[in-house]
Figure 1 (tube, helix red, strand yellow):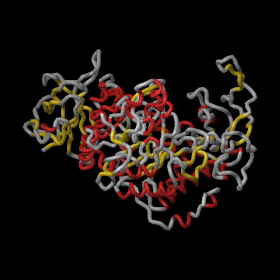
Figure 2: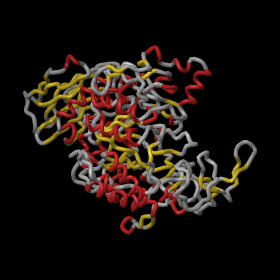
Figure 3: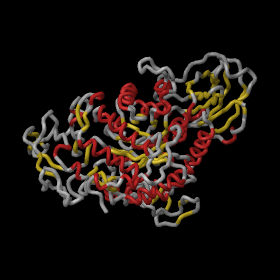
Figure 4: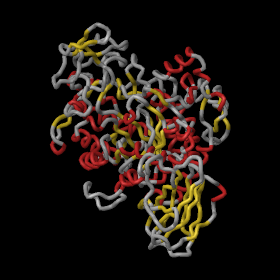
Length: 620
């Protein structure tokens, strides 16, 4: 029976089941972020199932000749583009069928886009326009499908983190604006309900067709579950700030009180972080999300748009959720906050709110991509993880489990009006393994954006172009249609899987201290690698040290030519004449070969890198 209000939830019954424990250390995990609508519909042909056997289906595997076939004519291209703006058909059952694909890649934790019921008249396939916080959207499946997906993931050693929203609901009511006449660009004028600090009149809650026919008043228990906002505890005017859309995204309190375009801002409470008074709406949302933990056995939440919430609201939520999770045996339930604005803001927000880790720190994606493509100083990325008096932390590994690192994502705010995946050009495709390896073996909790292991190359003027449907459908990757990309023979997939095995085996690659290393062309003059008047084509090496064990890792930012350099290693951990052995190289002939340690710049080894390559060496 559908849940209509929070008192319908039988928490006593739910707590009687056994629950999966939390991981001991989240820095050991490898996250994989997917948009559920764009991942799998379960109809693919010839992929390997969860047990490793081939599965029959109706959608063929993408081949090189299929690239671009959906845009051969302008009408075809228009059809493909239009498909990218709406629902394309990925489901929870489809995701469940690909758990084996993810496990064999080396993924240990899924970050799944919001699964909750969306406003039925909106094309909010991304899941961020929630209309009912106590139900799964039928496009994705059912609550039972969600539970089955989580259980299957757990059976394969994979945790599940659900994307959730506290800051806003979907488009659940319409304003009756009474000010701000604005030109529409076509000779007409309209009243624009943009934020000015004052509430707007409201025409009514939306019915199932998107019309404001329902009085803006507390809801009726006999009401339509597809209309207004649910659970019933939220179906009231006081749930919302009603102050119109954000116009200036950097102005406070506008970005705290305003709407995200048509999405409606929730009134979460008031007061300082230390004396915050949560609203009934925030208390209701907390209870709703506690229900999803108990019902599905998930392992964490990714909390959307933390920047746009009061710190007190985030602190209240984190405390209540963590306490509930501990009560059912989840001692390390992870709360990843989307915190934009740099590492100082991230640090302060984490310290103030008690959230577990930060996602969306502006510098990380830009500096990761720029480092590998040669137009960013490597020190800019590695210095993000250094100890800092500014953040008052003595250990330079404080960030190891406090930051989720990634370079591609689903909206790429940093790229403005032209979105593009890392592999959108030839250089990016050649360096795809290098950037994945760098992300996987440096500090932080690494996160892979779906399709990166298949070198997806999405690009265009809006978000939809970086949200290709991995299962094909009408909006397939590489401008294709009806071709899936679950190819375990793809060289980047295979090589990344090998790297993630080594990461899992070697604790230093997950928890060790981290140092960018100096290089030299002549073995005499050493300096850190950096761009010098053009793209940097260089060996970029770093060490991970755990207790007295050092691992030397490096990428080559030159996609076309092998590169050699003398590389500094720890002077105290090595003696001249010792040797390092190659654990992994993108050039398989290097694996198990050895390098001699020489007394140069303290201690150093001569490293030769394959084009666009990645290597790992350990002490013998």
